[in-house]
Length: 99
Image 1 (cartoon, rainbow, N blue to C red):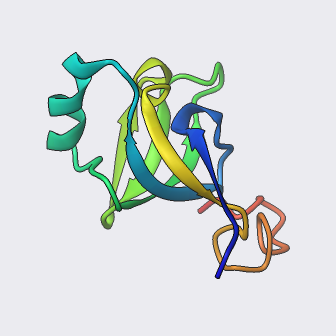
Image 2 (image 1 turned 90 degrees about the vertical axis):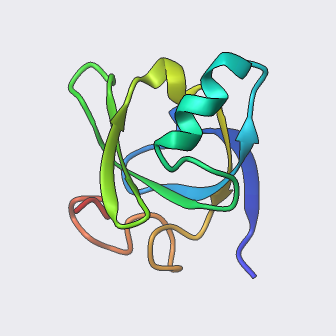
């Protein structure tokens, strides 16, 4: 079983991902995040970030979603330390595992 570590979504780099564990104390965001499909137990992966780091493009449930980094700061994920294909971050691809 892969090693997992709880972090906030905004700290993940492109190509990294994990399973949504929950939310921080920002209760006003919970409903909106759930409507976007960001619910507990769902696998999420960072596809890329804008040049200044905001917004972030995510891959979740077969679609791509862009959210503000400030909102991502409130989403707790269990980080998959093995990377996108189970062999470490980037899997040896030159683009760091980004697609």
